[in-house]
Amino acid sequence: MPAIPDVPLGSGAVATFLNASHLRERATAPLFALLGAAATIRISGSGSCDLADVAAGRTALWVQTDCADWDWLPGRALVEGAGGAAEVVRAHGHGWHLAGAPTAVREAAALLRAGSA
Image 1 (cartoon, rainbow, N blue to C red):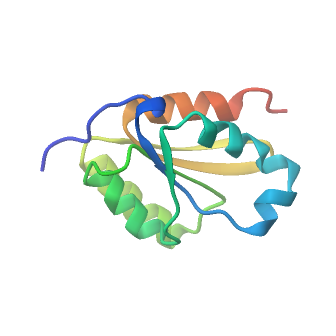
Image 2: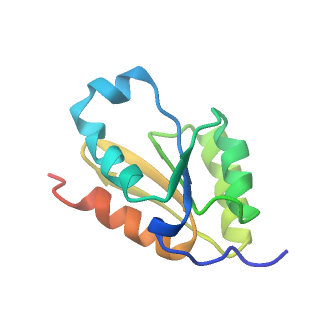
């Protein structure tokens, strides 16, 4: 399997999950800055499938707040095994789970850390 293409956030698709609480909660506002920096957004509802798409090179970045281990751990292993990066950023009262192209992950992490208390 070829390595995940290392692309910047602004030239790739970002996969995530949103629910109504994200729209009301002030602490998740940084998610909207991150999504606004991406080329496009995809929401499928399945973290495991989204992370498999990242590992296959179809999506540049996956982000989710406070992700359950059953989505995060297997998907993280797939992404890292394909040459991508994965990390959990503690910011704004949440654990932000990021996985994808190394440059996109670095840029997303910087956006999330900006202004964090």
